Length: 283
Image (tube, rainbow, N blue to C red; front, side, top):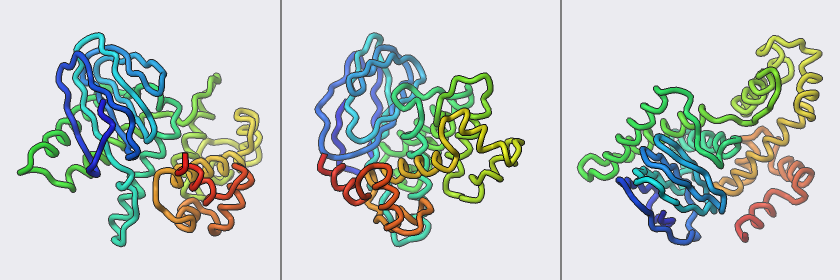
């Protein structure tokens, strides 16, 4: 599939294709959602072969390289959008919307199933995704109808459906409680009060004194360290895919200031946050 984009958003529809052209990845960085309506074959992502069939979703991020090995004529919708979707704005509403978009992207980036198709949990979800792809395709290609507001809101809805259908971790235990606790932490990571030991214990009907021990036993790490490790991952994502300043990233993730973020980054990554961003860009 072509990996070139010169607009903030590009939406394409490929009907009953027996093959797809593929060109090398360009330096322009964008995210991409693939929705395969019908067909089967293999999607080769970064050298990894993933079987696909009807009504399947795939997420690709900057630096991913992919191509199709089509076995049966395939119909695909693609949405490509640049990381400029996540740049800040002087308008409060735009900035709030940017944060919401990025939280959905974060959920997907840190899920366990990003490198396979996204399993939608119900027939209703599959129907909703198909309807939204139809809306966004029609809106994008009809110059008389085309509205940035509708495109952005529909894309946000698609990301929301995808994000609520992914798992953060996959833990093979007799109980799903630890899976639920970890997902709860990820969902509420921006609210310190909701991810305290007391709040987690109350949410999952576990003794306040036991919740830390239970989490450590199941995950091999304390709740406090798990939360801090995840925040470092979120900071990495922002450093890689946004133009937010270190102070803005620190504030969003609950660090005292950029110096606190730097100290934490050095402890976990071996270099300061600014140096990490520069190293990532150089790569």
